[in-house]
Image 1 (cartoon, rainbow, N blue to C red):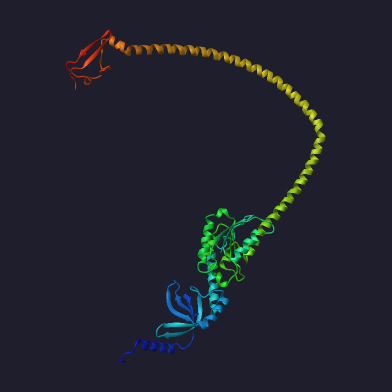
Image 2 (cartoon, rainbow, N blue to C red):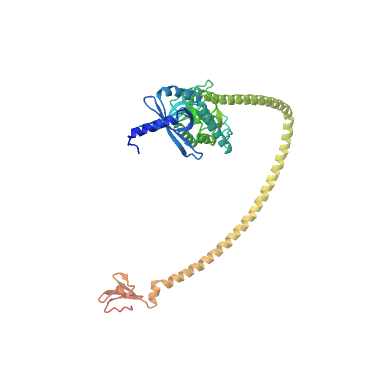
Length: 437
């Protein structure tokens, strides 16, 4: 066994062995899972490889030193339109190092932008293929614009120059068309943009009946800031939105997925305003054309009617004379018929009134007879139930303290009572009380 060595010596030996085993430069395809720049200008990344299920199967630290990074970064972004960030795939040229303190890492010497461009194109193609297979890619394109789209929901950054250009162009149009706009502010670049735009769409959806369309706009900027528009989730929201969506995000490169699925695509925010103004202008021209057609048709109709009235006016005197004679005869016949009908009606009513009068007298006599019998019966019942009648039959009323006694329980020995008979009264004192209970 060799004599003991320090950890530093062991790590140095490992570093020398790795340098000897991997002396070349290697082109490595990987995905950036983490990326950060430090104050010194260096770039630190973590590279990973994933299997088809998305599980990480390999991982390594990577560094781009400032001397390389200051040239590599702008070259990559200009070529791809994409910034170096977590989530993109890259093909990097690296050397393998093992530092005694920092262990195994890769030093990035170059990045092939064509690999990343290809991956971005593949991703865009995959999103479009997926939307096509789901049968929704054309859904928003199929929506028909209102003939006068003047209620506009705008998704943009409130401070964006493009938004200002759009509003100025739209509201100060030379034709004086009136537009009503509502801004739904969103982040239009960076990692939060996708979520922010979707949240704005959801707010508009909750008030969809208040708008005719949605306009998504942003001003010019780096191509790398447009990656949020190559999003399946955002594209899905756009395809399923109930209002036509216009996109004007200020770029001339190949269309993004959002451009592909939106109902209408224009290049810039100003172009979006011009398109809307054009819609109003076309409708105005259509209305003017209809107005001219109506005017011509009405004038032709008036001319024909004037000719017809002239012809009729020549026929009116004779027709009036004939009609007057006919109406005089009709009125005379009507007068005679009315007199006859009135006399017949009077005779019928006289007979009817006589019959009613006789029936009423008979009914009244029968009713009076019934009431007499009923009154006699009631009088008899009253007589039989009166106190005087009951007293004459031998009954009496016992009174104590001015009130009739209804029960033996209401009196006791020694009470003074008054006994009322049919022919007089008697006072008495109770000697003894016997209850039946």
